[in-house]
Image 1 (cartoon, rainbow, N blue to C red):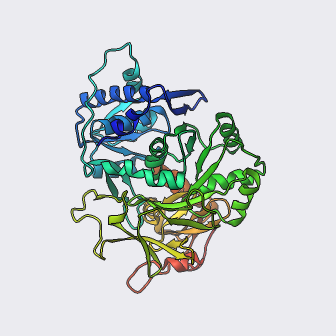
Image 2 (cartoon, helix red, strand yellow):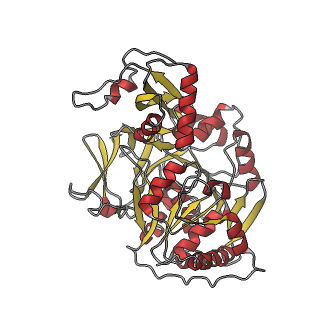
Image 3 (spheres, rainbow, N blue to C red):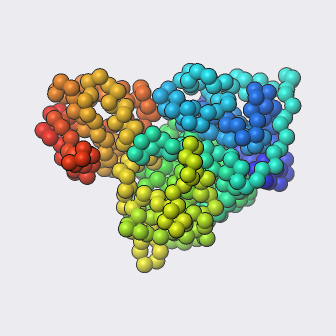
Length: 491
């Protein structure tokens, strides 16, 4: 099997596949034949840099055509794609490079400066030279004939209790996206699908272009920051028919108060956290659509969703995909790995593989409830994961960043409700000198942004004399979420 030959090559070469809008607003339609030819050229350039079958190719770029072509080139030659978020900082990248050991990183020049030494880099200028047909080019790598269990994709987890882990998916993961593409995304050959998620995330790797193409649809990518004032205009102008946004983007659009009918849209989906009844009603009234929530993990791929053709239940993450078995054990959602075609092969560096000791069931760590109709409702994280604006943030990463500041003696990060973002990061900090102020709170936020991805920075910083702990020294996060800390000293 190979995604390039099995999916791209089955379409007429002149058929539109991808609409790319760059950071300057320039648009270009790419056809399947062009994607095949251009990604083949990049595969030759990667091979010339020593990349072979099974080697890891990192990308550090936004939603731009070079990212898509590099992913396709990687899969064409049987290498392993490692997409990275553009918000990662040098410490984040150093950890990921140490775990995944990429042979090459293809990225934007201003981002590659944060890469650790020892990784060969291929810039956007290098890619542009490869795409210039007037220049001499390397011979394209042949299309690899892959077994279903061959490695194809690495996506790092958010790091719930420690450092982010590298989840490895095999070649079968890509075509297996058809289940969620047909049942949750719900696209077809006449659609233009826009999945707005940033590169580097699990949902991006499987839904920005993989899912649309599996259903014959065209995909849209836009290399620009979210602008509520422009979102509806762009959808209307380009004729987007299936839109997938983060819950925060839906909330921010609605908060502007200028939602209007969108005749081209026939399907709206979201994942990451529930939108809530009021938000669903706002979009039902304005767009005539029910925003269909869904659920998945980096390790499992997509598991549940409000399926195409079924009424959306407010607050529900839907029902399992056909064939995927799930259960609720002690309030936790668990997935039977053998029935989940997008289940991961394991974490890199973990020779024992996924923990399926309980009869082949995977413990997701997500607490859920189930109604009489079989719809699931997310109740929280068993491991204190913070979900903010669709980002899943491990508190340990925030705490580690805070503790790297010389003024901080102790730190804890917990989730705090927010009407727009769902939740935000709230940090409770014990300072070495015992005094807190607005100035040091601002300094700590900026410090976190400088050492890790900015979305992890606490929007609320509070100061305390001490943190609530168990007799064994473990943080009592439930008390912190409820607002308990010893002698609040500052903002």
